[in-house]
Picture 1 (cartoon, rainbow over the protein chains, first blue to last red):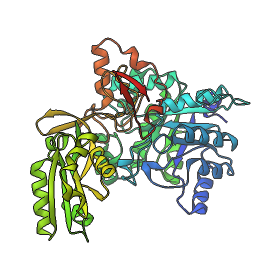
Picture 2: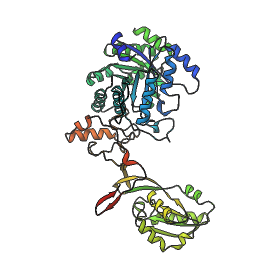
Picture 3: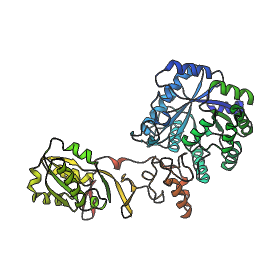
Picture 4: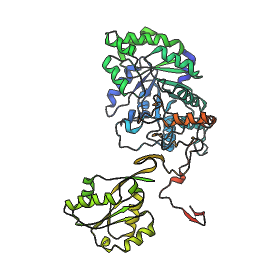
Length: 280
Length: 220
């Protein structure tokens, strides 16, 4: 099922991002099974920060056995245009319908900083490849015997500055066929809404929520998560011992009327269960 | 200018372990300019090798080791080069390969070749072009997306741009931030708005060779 069809039908979607396993398939399956009680849609990361894992596609195939509608993440960091199209055809063959098209972190920032960065395909070009497949075509003009259709989404990082340039790129993603956006974690509801108002996006926005448990985690993310800024106010509230889950319930309540869904990142099952229950 | 950097002394000594007689070649153009293979650097390496008990059989600085005919001619006057255990070359990789093609003895690279660079100030070199074979500088406002953007993004910027700075190196301006400002200034933002197609890499199939006769490319 396309995630956008679900949004259209139900008005709102909750999704969760899981990291594919390295070697322990069973542990991963248990996690998927547990989260599937709450989530129909799940994202599977693609060699997150350049670290070697099972591919997003294989994780998605495993998850499908648990009734999950996977959103595979695909980056251009490690694959050229041939491999990207091959991965998309493979996903289609396995009944995967949703894909998040990403440029990907640079190899120098990840698990193997000696590896060559491929970078033949950026996120906009990947969306274009998806668009071509949906017209029954491969890049280069080769016709396929049938149309290979996906619901393709793209990333939105509201922290990227200059904002004008950031919005310029988001509009470009929309123009080449992004049908939804999944955002970086939101830590400041007002700032996020201000961004959305300014960006005037046409497609549904699924906001990232990453429950930051304590000040130490907040400081770590502020320093290490690409482009992410944790507001001082949140740092203060965490250091004052406020319940972190209630802080995120509050953030979500403020932004919920303006978004089409929530995308939980680095979250434990009990945390998301609590937040979803409170927010409804 | 081709920018190179002399290899660490320890690496050079590893190369010549088990050898006694070594001939040194430097380049009087690029490698001299970026202090990786001029006369001064050869003198330094000579001392290092001699301190390690080696014999430096001779030294030669060619004004452009990459010019095959010139290097060949110079080498004719240095028979000791041929009688050495090896020749260590301090030029760009092209020069090192040229020497290796010309002589029947083992050739060691003395440098790591880094990039084709602009001289922005004495001793300061910056990469501007990756010599990809198909220039994109027209639409990209003179900022090479392959070179200045570490991800080589044709439709940028990436989500990692922060205050106009690059995610990979926060001391550098984001290539796309520069491109965008120039496009605005030049009144051609539409050139950046149009999604860019894939790069045609056919002119990057290596090794590349062209033949120019009477100002015309006759073989490609």
